[in-house]
Length: 53
Image (cartoon, rainbow, N blue to C red; front, side, top):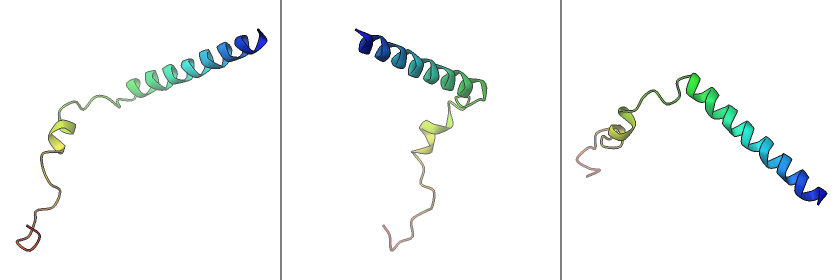
């Protein structure tokens, strides 16, 4: 029975750490840019030369 309590405390602690990390990232603006990531995959970084095509 004590192992279950220990695992329950450990899982709640890990969940709280992940929640705190998520809230911190939202407050620091990690998820503000919603437009460019879907568009970024449509364009190549460097244009291909005739040899590479």
